[in-house]
Image (cartoon, rainbow, N blue to C red; front, side, top):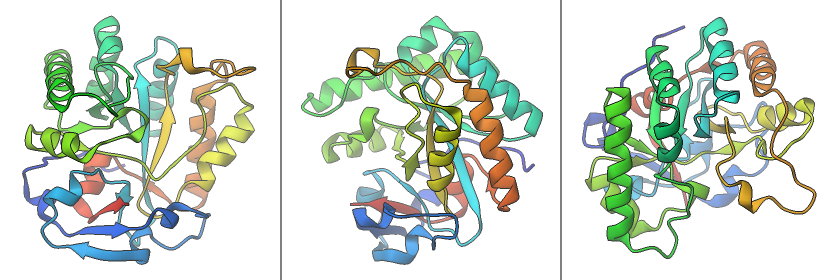
Length: 270
């Protein structure tokens, strides 16, 4: 397994690569042998800053590469199980953490970094950015970033907005402050309790060359559970283990988000 790359640098050379812009329908219907996301491009932005500030949903890759990402943690039970599987399999993932849980579980953040995984911020909390004062959002987010860096002792340059909601003005302000927004291309719908087989199947169907797969090591908004829904109680380590078996069978290589962003053009979905 190739060692994980360093954090993405929004102001560095990788950020000056062309950005491939595609329509929302490009994310529909991806299966095991789907063409690359960038193959459905509307255009390639040669001056990518303003477009990239909307957040990469994946990368334009022809090789079978995928980034496995986790949101909402760290969680005291799920995160260690996931890290155990990653360590045993020699795989690196990307974790987008919540500031409130970083304060509660700093030792897990340090373990994530010590074991070579990439680290990003998912917000001070899980509130949506929609309708909030951009100045307040930037100030709160940068305070959470500073605390995460203090705990992890590494630079943090990636930000995944809660619910994937990134108003353009806020995205550009965070970009200028040194945080690149990162979205995702598909998910496993693992935020409620379901059979492991169903979660694994949904995860695998969401993988294609250049994908950024969204998984969760926690659910940071339990107050939004609907009628009949329960917090995830299935073994998230078992889901990951079985998913990695399928990816290996299909000749996929796992990469961190910074590795993908450093090696391929970003894909932004509008």
